[in-house]
Amino acid sequence: MKRQWQPDELIESFILLPNELELIPNYQTNATEHNQLGFAVLLKFFQLEGRFPKHLGEIPQIVVEFIAKQLKLTHQSLVDYKWKGRTIKEHRAIIRSFLGCRPTQQPEKKSLMTWLKEKVMPLGLHLNAIREQAYQRLRHLKLEPPSPKELTRLISSAAHNHEQDFCQTIAARLPADTRKRMDALLETEFTRDHEESQFRQSDFNRLKSDPGRLGLKSLFNEIDKLQSIRQIQLPTDLFASYSPKLIEQYRRRASADLAGRLRRHPKAIRYTLIASFCYQREKEITDNLVDLLVQTIHRLSISAERRVERELIANFKRVNNKEALLYRIAEAALANPDQPVKEVIFPVVSPDKLTNVIEERKRTGITYREKVNVKIRASYLHHYRRMVPAILETLDFHSNNEQHRPVIEAIELLRQYQGSGKRYFTEDEKVITTGVLKSGWRELVIESNSKGQDQVNRVNYEICVLQTLRDTLRCREVWVMGAKRYGNPDTDLPQDFEAQREQYYLELNQPLDAEAFVTKLKLDMTAALSSLNTSIPNDPQVNILSRGNGWISVTPYPAQEEPSNIHKLKQEVAKRWPMTSLLDILKETDLRVNLA
Image (cartoon, helix red, strand yellow):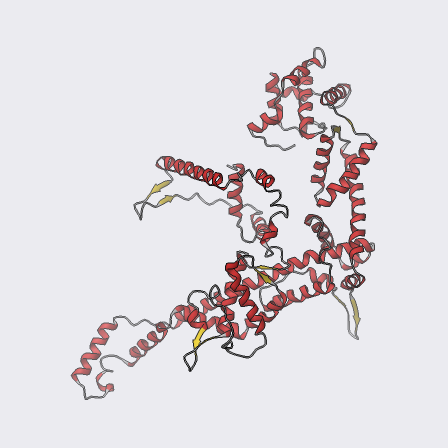
């Protein structure tokens, strides 16, 4: 039972109804306070949890106080209640009779074990969740659950039987060639020369390794791992009818084992573990590849900007008061029109100062963005361009939005020109520019030839396509086949969403009518703004400034010490939901459950 209860939750779960109040003083004549309170606590606990508590520590004090207040008793009296003996047995028997329940017998235990095996185990739940499902099932059947030890034994038996059936089914679906390749993943080689002996790491252990440091080397390593998994040729529908949580359980078991230990498993279990690992690892590596692609494209731009800024700072020498300088040069030149420059101009302005004027003009004549683009092109052409053929050959990009179809068409065009040494696309080639070229890139991508005709520079076009691809991948307007985090966003919804729309909206507590949703949202926003308008004048930490149309100034709270595990929590959030910050999750949680 949970420890924290809100007042409305206490009323909903622990209020004593009239027939229950009548039962409490009548179950035994001259009942003591602690027996009356103990009986009431047993009754409400059983109604909520579907079982009897084993000791006082299972019941939160706030619950005991709430029940005692209804009976006009002191909650401290429950300390004297005996949790073993004849009295509590009588109490349990009366409660069973009142609620129409009976103890679980052997036939019901076998039926529960079968139900767990067929209905619960395929969901891939953890032990506590499975136990809760069992309690709910027994409560529905009006059966008193067996002891925790007995229930654990039933769950273990159901899990063992389910694993045998599941592994036999998966292993039977795998072709013989696929099973041979799986066995080859676990092989290690022992080599010996005159000086030393060495073991070669198994391919399975290599597949478990992380991408490592950002760079082309790590990108190519991830591509190599992905190709190794694809060569195993798992059937595409191998796990189509199974819960992702169940597959993830077997994938974690495989990841925790070494290749040698996996080889000692029975064949059915071994092949199921490796298949689950490869199935999930393929998605993870695909996501890693997309992450590396996104980060590499970002790094290309950031590095170029930093180099340009360093050069500008190092080389930029500003010449002040150039108007007065020009006036002095013009005055000297007009006063001595026939004299040499060296004799007329240099006495007025030194050669060094004129050199600085020229350098300043050269460096300010080209815009900052043009300089960055030049650096991006140089880095891409001499280093990063090697990744394009490998990425286009490995990843399969798609989009469900017609607005972003030009990006997919541009990627197909890059595939067609792989290995070509041409500097420009052919004149008859249809090059997609709308929806692909970013602001300020058109002049760099489209050039004019000697005949005055437009032609598209391939290198600059590739850079622009990659930058647009990065933006669309991050918002999943473009998705990657076989990925999980960057996969098809339409699969995020339950597959039966359209058929069960009403049920899902009911669970989300949202209206089906769009106008009703908008109306409620407007009312909530109006109420929130009214509350803000009312509270601001009375809040010393908030001020309305005269700046602009009245900016709101909020005094920040003093910084608190970071919790010890906040860094790990942020890492886990970034791993699961890379586009969502921890602050966003906390704000959404506060809106739903009122953390404050």
